[in-house]
Length: 232
Image (tube, rainbow, N blue to C red; front, side, top):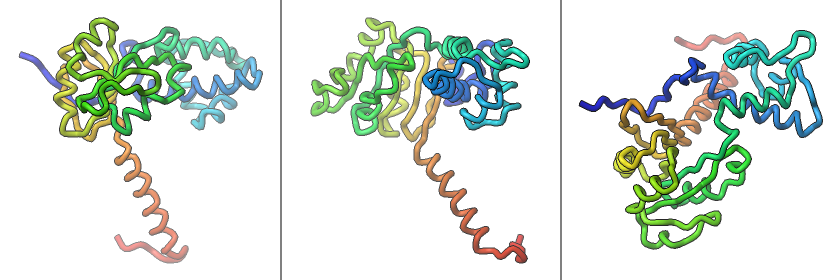
């Protein structure tokens, strides 16, 4: 019997909390900016300010990686940058396949920030005959039917789903069958996958709705005077 789970991120193997793992790329980016500015060491307060987080939260997050700070001195920027990059698997190159060569897939495939983060778009797949054979970011769009061969030949374990919602589950099933074990899902659908498969979901519409909620809250507050009470 196969047990399935929905697209919830699993706890990191070393026991690092998911929330901490999600912040590690932010710290890595901040450290990169500090390094480019010629900063050799920084305090937790300086790094927290650069990352936009609370210093106590940053120290707690970094404690999950080990002890890389020196009391009275702070963090060695280059050393901490290396350790976080290693924890995130960025000390090696990861080949990725993108399924879906529409507007979103095209934007992802031509994004210039992947290379510096150890991500290489190895293949792009689609079912649209008009897109197959075209080139995106220097990568040829291939038929989706070639998925298994692409994954096998490239030893690919990471895939991006950038398809319409109604096609996402079938794509996920094919990816799992081909041997993919990590999926980044941009489709507006909840994917059912085996427990061994990691899924991260990015829903731009939900994120915008959350921002709209906060804007609505601010607008409602502004309409209420300082001495007025909002009816419960």
